[in-house]
Length: 143
Image 1 (cartoon, rainbow, N blue to C red):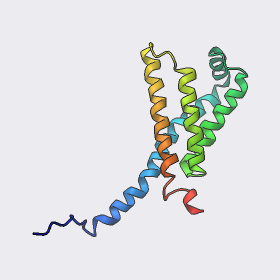
Image 2: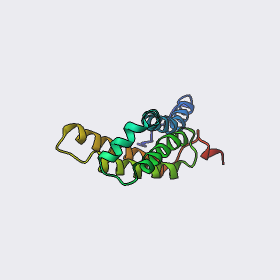
Image 3: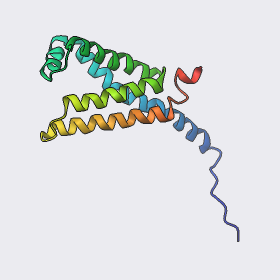
């Protein structure tokens, strides 16, 4: 008796390939959305954002504000289009962990607890991009 591995029908292969190619794009867009919305919020409310940065005691709050805008808006756009994706995702992961540690470090507060681990989880998703790249539907794949 011979046991053989199941074979996929030829009609399901193209659909599986499309899904495998689309998944990295969907993941990048979903992760980038949070950064783009957050960056836009900072862009339209600079005084409030700089005040929040000052309240946690970061030096040179205006510089921190500009760096956050750069990471969230430029990084978010770069993720969406898949440009320099591994490098951008790494920078965004570091930024996200730093943000968790700096702004959400009161783990006794349930709200801050969830924000801290949300940021850590987002960093994990970004590190998946660092490990596996942008995928087929990206500017990186065109080079």
